[in-house]
Length: 233
Image 1 (cartoon, rainbow, N blue to C red):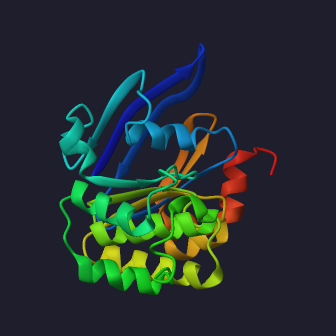
Image 2: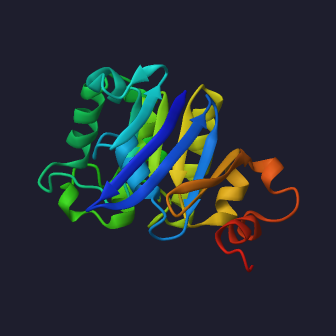
């Protein structure tokens, strides 16, 4: 599904990613975790083509990142900060994204609009949306389009309890129907419950990559994370 080999990136001569190797299979839900400045967002931004790597190989379904359009149609990306034209309505933004991905599943779209409780706000301009509403809007788009892989940077930030439950249920349905998900998060207790895989990043290197059940046999994800981040823990 997703293959990242020897990914290297520096900014102003300072190494940020020091040879990232990541393998994500179909139907995986990968929690990508690390401390502030570990390189999580940089890794996701490189995978999604927002910034360029200095060196390394990145493929999704065997399609190289350099095959720009075909590669980008394999995934949908939800960044931590969602940038949208403020004067576009939510409805038109969703329809625009669906056209880009050649998706015409209006019935599925309406289902997720209702489940994420945005039906009464759909014709409002996106500039009036709160942070949490923008995340719900992006999740609606992602689950409707149903790409091969959904990549998310802190997708649960700003979600109310109802939206959190809907997110987890929708994610499970998406994966059961052939989808794959990667998301960075600081919410380790939730990640432990809903993710099947774990990759821990420290100082630009992955220090643990394993099945969630295997990684947490000897303790919680929080304790495993602390052991891998701080030698003295």
